[in-house]
Image (cartoon, rainbow, N blue to C red; front, side, top):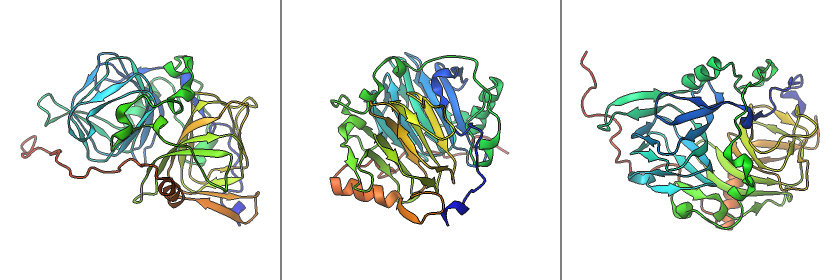
Length: 353
């Protein structure tokens, strides 16, 4: 039964990860000091994923997030001004901004790099904080990539059959010069450990499911509405054969991962992957003695078996992750504001007909 999902799927290699260290930084006009490495931008849903850099001294105006956004601070630090999200957040901090949230402002005192997935457009407000000055959408990310001759990671199984354009630049992430595993392991360094929408990932315990004893999880957020799950994974064994019934993405922070369609030496820190819904992996494993650690956003269940055509062994869904976190007493990030007081829209029209 299980080999009937996509029996003819044999990707050319584009499904493999993109090395973010090899991508150029592309300045965006929306905010001075803002640049991105574009990874994925969906024309269907409006979701986009980028590595975002805020230059030292840069400051964002107030923004309204028309879709939810999650982020992991890879290097540097930034602050949010006022409201539900007020605080200062350093390396290893994971945050979740709910849809329709207003952020009163952001600032970076040092160069800061973030792995960002936005599930909708970001509206930048004018100085008075009401009218919209500009909007950042997935189409802006697609356009920026196209102007640089870059291929974005495919959104579907069919897209994985298309050729990939190799980037011409080489702009390593700041975390590549350091021990990136320390972002999520070791002593807690960030006061965000008690923030309802941000967490220092070092403050969370590694949780282990008996069915996968070689895999440890730091469970960050579980949505009971959408089934989306965000985790940090320590993967020191061989994952059994599985299908991604929903899409997933992840970035390697430490170690090297062996992966279908990838090179024999595998992929190392800074490589970001997107698994289209329906993707199958007969084995995924670490290739060195070093802990293999990566981030993961899971947008649906993962179904495991013993090989093509064998019965379903078990399924990991949001309920599995929620039960693990609850059993361990591990705090999960909130998925919405307790009370929205942001006044997202002006009281009167922005223009007259």
